[in-house]
Image (cartoon, rainbow, N blue to C red; front, side, top):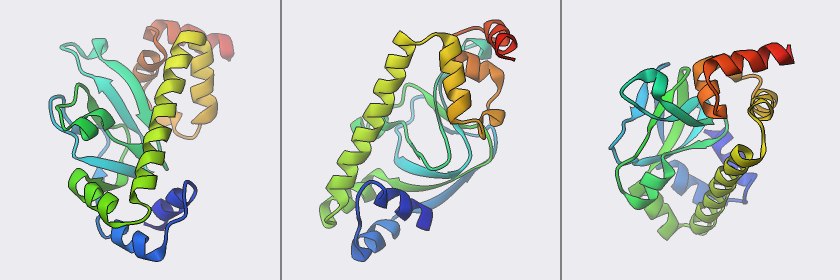
Length: 190
C-alpha cells in the first residue's frame, strides 16, 4: 500500500497519523480481465487507485460494436465513475478491467470521514478533483484539436507498456474512428 502513499505525497505531504487514518479505510479489490465492476445504472461507491491493470470507461450499447469507449485508467492512476461518486446518482457508463486489475479503494462514506477527521483530507480531495478535471479538459481539447492519428500516437507514446492490453476496437472508439480507419493509421505509421 506504500505506493498509494508515495503517489499522494507527490501531490501533498501527509503526516503519519493522517496516513494511518486514511489507509485503515482502504480496501484491496481485484478484478479479473473482462470484469465489469461498475454497471450502467449503479451508483459508484468507490474511488480507487490502480496498483496494476488497465480499466476502460465505456457507454454500453445494444450491439457491442456500437459501444463508445471514452477513457482508460492505468497503473498509478485514480479510477472512479467520479460524477456518480460525487452526485450519488446512477452511472451513465460502465467500468471494465481490460486486464487482471489490482486496486485499493475507499468508499464514499469513508472518504467523507477522512475529510472530516484529518488535516490533509480536504486538501487531497480538492487536489484529486483538480487533477481529474484537468484530465477531462485535456481529453476534450484533444478531441477538438488533434487528428485521430495524433490521438493514437499520443496514447501509444504515453502508455506504450499498457497498449498491448487494450483491444484495437476500444482504441479506435477512444480516438473516434472505425477499426478500419485505425488499421489504415497504423499502416501509415509503420
